[in-house]
Image 1 (spheres, helix red, strand yellow):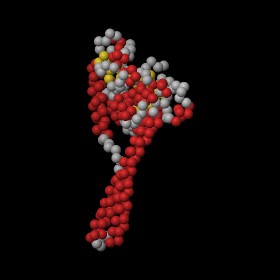
Image 2: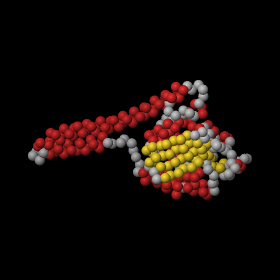
Image 3: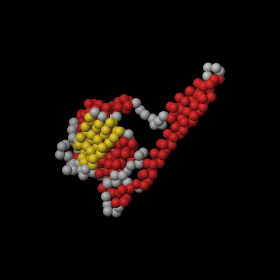
Image 4: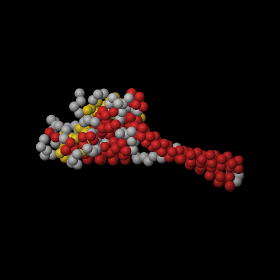
Length: 296
């Protein structure tokens, strides 16, 4: 399984590199042609109309070549536009939570319990219990009027769920089977096999820095019941600050899309309920702490 995942990741990387190589090869050819034309036309420049035309063609080829060599084949969205889109959708959830008077922290629940996607449960009461599997598998957002009132609350797909799916489907990471996960710690896994594959924290670091390109650097500390992630020099810091002001309940209770995707990953990896203990933004750094529900 791990070999297949690694092969898929290598294939994606090579495919992306091949696309960039095609553009760069075209750019280099244009630079070579442009340079040759300029060299031929320069001695007769301003003396012959044909030489003038050739000079303009050569300079144009040099310009196009330089642009093509540096061309990135990825499509980007204006940062301000992306931030406004995020704020608008998150603010709607914040308004709903406020009007429903739901005040408690959301509990992330792994797919092994929901029978489907990772979900986040926001309880109505402080002395709550996580709903039974029968309620979790239902496609209901509002768990109201249950026989056990302690299980009542709001059940949603987390804001970071689709980004979490991207790490599964596009980046080919199965977090439930990441090295170090509960089902990979059996005695049949040799020490040699464990050293062949990156640990959970190494995989998470790779995904956040290179896969999702969220931050320039990431520091990850995993303890027995807790995960701490520090994103350094992240372009997300401005949006984080704006969401704190526009959607404070979302930030405090279920986390914005960035905090949420980390909580989804940790929930699936640990295969247990998780809460976002805190999220703190300072300058261009963001610190996110996720804690296993009921963990000491």
